[in-house]
Length: 304
Image (tube, rainbow, N blue to C red):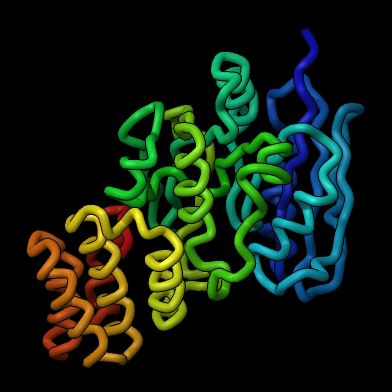
């Protein structure tokens, strides 16, 4: 039986060597179906990498003329995709060889699925840490309860008709595109549960190269946007307390200590068990720096 063709979208901005590694990991997939790679150049010159192409592999470049950033670049690729499935890969990450095949099997087994993700391997520059997802099926309530960090956007494969239809494109109004992956997961799971291949089939780089690394004020703004966009958080004190605690920490880390403390108190009123709210208060009171806290949690392959 022939395998469905897939379009893989790689947004990039001035990281040619990393982008080439990402593209090569797509082209090298143990997948018998056709794979089209679209590299979307965001505010940089469109220069494709020199790579070898098998008979059922192709690559082309596009320039992002939509809103600058990850969301606009991904939407540029989605709208140009030739195939019925669209996969995402950030330019500093790469896939393991069996990733796509295992996901496409899940689409066959679960035809109601519009998104299939995988677990991931984190590369923090000192070593790698496997990050699994708690379940093979992720519901809307699961995602309201917790942002499942192991379910990274570089693992996502969507049905193209969902992105062009009931699900919609990546939200370009999100401040600097931060949290677009979580927004997509929330929106998808409100339609149908997210299926997961619970194996680490994508390696994600967490070494500070990210365009958003350390931009705490942007994080805070985007999280407040998501809190308004998804009013379901407010239906459960623990759910809204979690988001408020993240906003609190981001504000305190950005130097907006009074605002950070205020959001931390809101979070604690909703749920006193939120550790990030207490950490935000510690940072707001200048008892310890946010950078020190981040360094400590990253030793365990985690983030704030």
